[in-house]
Length: 313
Image 1 (tube, rainbow, N blue to C red):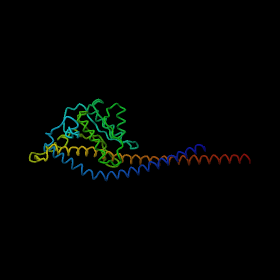
Image 2: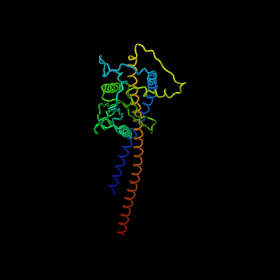
Image 3: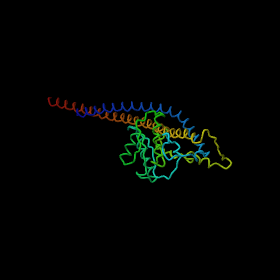
Image 4: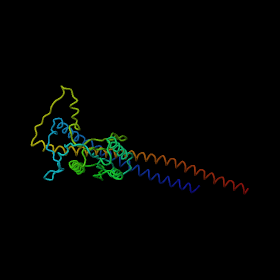
């Protein structure tokens, strides 16, 4: 019995230490969540304005006629962002999958990966038809081990991502699209709703078309509500789009990463809270077991002493 008491006591001590760690991790995740939420609120204003500008350009058919080059870069070596407007028959589909670099985030990663696989299956794609752009180590490792073509990996996203981090990702995405590595691109991530809820989103990023930008909303209006928008451009239509399109692509990718990171912190906080609560429940059960075992040991000792005393008498 003493050995059993010692074992239960060790388990209580070990579980208490684990509970302290998970409680600390919960506080850290909650602090990160609060910080990134403040950042997200201000960014949403900018993202909304950029999308509004692109929507108006699409409605005015400014995106319809541009001098789109076949290559990813122009003669000066500068990235050809007008390639994002080029449409072609879909033979391969690119998917940007945003996951975390680590575990201990509950069902966050598994939900994104499962829903992405469902998206691939629903669209009738095979491994040969899909090109994966992985933001986060978990998604990169998962798809690599299962034989998917992981054309680009980006790891080490900060807890509160900066806009500068997104630019090499966008450049790689646009270059691969312009070079024909894939013919359309989706961004898949977990959208943050609240601390307990996140929703999977799959947004079509490339090619940029009027249909993607809400032109359908315009065509759905009554005849007396329809209007035609005209723009006078200076210095040229292409020059303006070369400035606006990269900002739109960066805002879309950065917004997805920012949203996904917010969902990751919320999921981590929830998971660590659940782990801390479970640790408390285990400690309570072990303490009850310890007290019962200790009481049983004391009762046994008293019985033995009483029996020995009776034998002497």
